[in-house]
Length: 519
Image (cartoon, rainbow, N blue to C red; front, side, top):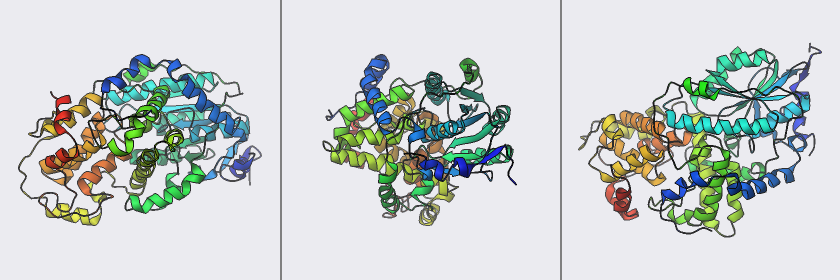
């Protein structure tokens, strides 16, 4: 029998009627002083026109999410409880993978519930002292972005709470303390997030539902496919067929009309709570949504034109450079696609190529990690790849390097060394070279499992966009043939696709790249 102090979620409707309440681009040689100069010029007026245009696109869709037909397929309820208490005092959005205020379906959904029940919305972020192989470099990018989230929340009369510690403990305490009616959580396919979610469902009060919203993918992971996909060709049509439904504009997150104390977060205490390896910050990438939108703007105006033909040449600056902001959720991939598509009449091939990389390939990576528990080890490879790697595991290696030698770029190969130096110095490595880099680690270590462990370690430690499904799949593709096919059999690699220095020389001027990145 239902208590008079609860309302069913089916009546405020997480998943049914609730959603229908109402209705100059040019070929550019890589010049990293261009991106570094962004640090000097990233003033509000630099992006005011872009921000204003994006803001108008939101308000043109709806005054607020309350008047927006929210697609219920973006949401799933993770708990048995499907009711929200009548006397609850707030709704909580647990921000994790998508650290932004606007263009965020999780935030919008949480505000929709808040407005429906006329209770304040509180945003929480749980800062853990360590996270996989992240160093102070990645934590700096994260924390500076969160400071911008805090400022935006304050401007919208929405409290932002930085909680220090493991989510199952600190978030449970917060939910109980603030008499929370429901918790909205971001989606991540990684094991650690699944573990936290499982523990939270056990720790939370039985009458507090947890709902998960996929704000990272355009087509929600569980909607795009209900199984592990074999390759891009098997998921591409599934995603493209669903884009008309999900690639929509966003309504705005609006100022909360409800009174709620605005807390003050101790950022110094937060930084002191970290237990991570010290690593140099990078100069080219400024944390936060504002800087991410500026990078998106510069991509559309100066690099998009050559993206289709030059993105695989490390000597040209024709990449989007958006992966750090995508990884930390500081800008939305969906927003990026909406902006890039405005240039389709001018640069059709480049726009289609960017959609393939930013949507199909990215969402394929989420699919792999979500449906494959062994996404970061050899057991996650297809059987043909496991068999061929095992067959050639004891093949003689001409060169063997330790993890430390590889980390310090101490190999005989100047192109590989230059790639590793770029990774360490800039927190990124050109996409084409990431493949070559990982495949050489397979060639120069004692076993495929060691190669995979080292490549993931270095990627996660130095890349701003490490610890990400894209990174795991990139290493698994290079070393284990995931999402690839078998090739001509050869020593060490077996049937795994092979890459070598001579092949790179045919693709681009390797000496030009090597000369940029010397010790």
